[in-house]
Image 1 (cartoon, rainbow, N blue to C red):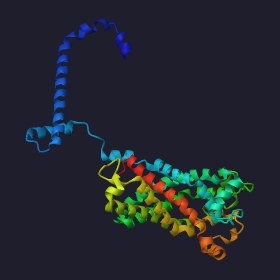
Image 2 (tube, rainbow, N blue to C red; image 1 turned 45 degrees about the horizontal axis):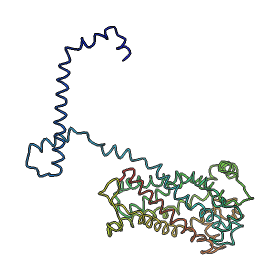
Image 3 (spheres, one colour; image 1 turned 90 degrees about the vertical axis):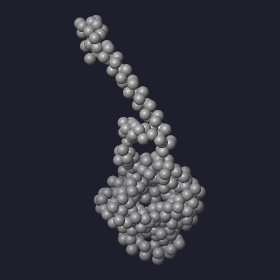
Length: 380
């Protein structure tokens, strides 16, 4: 457009042709500047009225209302909420950070739970020392790649589902409070487990392998082998029943315990345990070290309640990798077999002390990161 105007034959005559309109343009500019100055003056008056709301002038109060209506407003609450409702990525990051810190402990726990023939005579700390000697330090992270692929969607689905189920239960059933959190947490945990269970199966198979006895060369090869040799898609869901049965109390009690500790702490000692939220100063949130402590305690309580079912799940997942796989086909059958042959302490609760070590930092980091991301995304 500029090129067309500059190249027009009448361009040299433009100033002469526009000269009659110069006065009107100048007057319009003066009127605009005058309005702008009056608008600025009203804004100053609005600021003074906000500092002294009991001002004597009614006229100034009416000017305040008009000025505030004309001033640009911030985004609507709905728009802000929509912009902030993208916690999936960040909650997935929270889960990845939590699991990465305890990946070596996860590997050792799988070896002990299923009584791997190379480490079944050792305890927790002896196994932690024996794995690097036999398989190198990278042996502690065997199966970590599959775990990262699994935990990213798992953490995202769990935390997002928890918020959605809370709203759904409150809306449909009219339930709120601690029972509300318990039900929402249980449903969120079950949803996340079902969606990511095949990845958990592959991760367990890879982590149970010992150097020199590899049955699977990688994640894709494990998927192909399980699919072709263990009944197709059904093979990926071995042990799903004890997982779901155990996940309900685990996820439910972890969210229930954390929410209960948080509400009690902020109610009894708000100045000592709480601080204003970053996105809403009127809302109190737990201080970082308090949130870590509450998250760790919530994870420990939930693990104690559901741990025997976790042992059952792991044995059923490993399936053909175990010499006694034919005796661990159902949940009840596996529970009876483990109890009869190994007892309670060395069977149903084998590796529990290690689980405390791994679940406390894991849950602490997960809940603390979740609370921080809620503030960062303006969800409070």
